[in-house]
Length: 258
Image (cartoon, rainbow, N blue to C red):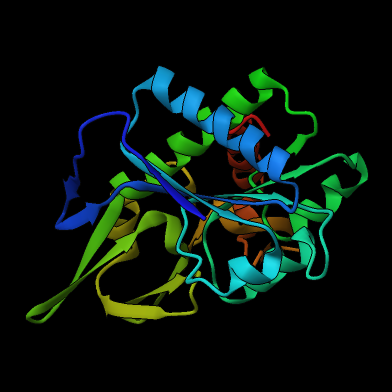
């Protein structure tokens, strides 16, 4: 079931020739009453905030969600469902390189640690707490706005490619070329200096080595002079940069309220 809601006039945001359309949300819950409760919370929140146009799509199980293109900005996902349950559904989405923000909704607090494995954005406990829901929506929309608004244009000859910063895991330099590693697995290369690239990105990026610039959004941990990223990549950390890296990462976590 898909319900389109238009609480304010339709508009598009044009940023570097990239058009952002209406906000697309999905609810995957096998309880129709819970689905309605989440929908009501969304409607109330968006009406109060007078946000952009949006639509909500509802699914009664993980299989029906997976059968769509899953091109949603934000997914509210129940954990306790028939197989595939919410956690299994999330894992399958991530394997497909799906980048939707995922918010788990459940009565079981013990699944909170499993949620980190699939890069969950938040974790809501049933029955829903209105204040917690509003904080989650505030953070989610802020994150989505940042993803939309921030991108770089890479020019190669007569062609160019627009790459959202949120998709860049890290950038490395080899010789005179830069290699941008994206979360989709795509690698874009072009001639430039790492210093120039560093000036074009924001505070989530850190130069951990003279040849590497990493996006903290994808960092899982640091050990023995190496950073481990959520996609499995391992990149080196310069000994001279280890202390600055720790301080920068702690500041990043504080900014995100982690």
